[in-house]
Length: 340
Ligand code: H2U
Ligand code: ZN
Image (cartoon, rainbow, N blue to C red; front, side):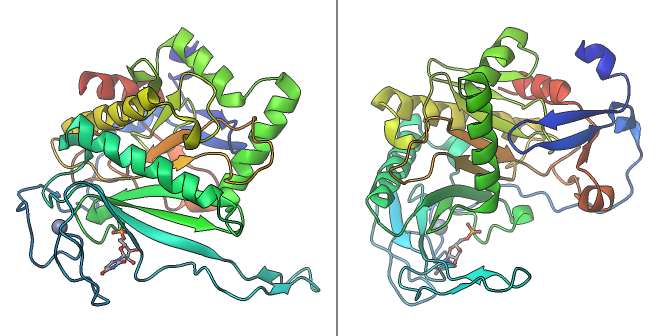
């Protein structure tokens, strides 16, 4: 069925967002004479005295990092959201609506080692990172002003990451951000219509088809979603129904870390470089309501297209009409499987 579809231009539907992506498989032979990005290449020292995330160093605001030995969490010195913003709502004119927003932004150093990143950290060290995510989420669940917890990692200068020291960020907010709210509405509606969570049904079908599966362990599956937009976009999905990270068992914390590590190892092998990406977990809001329609998942959006230096641009048609891709999700999954 997909072989026939993949012979020519077609559209694929993203049930999580309701958006369509244009797939043009015949275009992969297109010549390229545009921008070449600098290859990232590692070769970093284990400790960098000028790094604001390395143990014992001073950060921009003057605070000093402890001599941490595994993970280290601190409040972002330039937080985009603040916990004590006074409440203010402008809603009397439908054309000029605004409201104040509260939240907390944190930075999590994954390791004291400046030269490592998730694919070359030990399984135990990556497991520790997932444990910290879980306890941070639980901490925000107890916070009356916080509705949503966004855990994300920006990796690589090409993705705007300010520092190669392995780290991620957590931004928690008093409202549910629009992309998350959209996925929430779509999942709620699907569960209402079909009686089961969307991504639980989706994974079952993906496992039957196998064409887009990259890696499986006992608890999680890594796949290239049918509706992927970025060339090597991927997703980590739990095998069982898990709305949020606080429900992870100890084995699931370990299994998630394994999936995260194995996918990023495969990424690094695709073009033999430190593969840049933006990745993040979407999960149920950290509030007391019923969120059973939610299925936690981690999105990976890597920009590279055909080498360590050639990235996919989301411009022109993509910015004005619809996202478009050339290599199919099936062939990207095959490349990633071969790179495991
Ligand atoms: P990236 O993950 O995009 O590189 O961002 C790193 C964050 O670290 C960024 O949000 C914060 C920046 O505000 N930061 C500090 O909190 N303290 C510093 O001394 C420098 C950077
Ligand atoms: Zn460092």
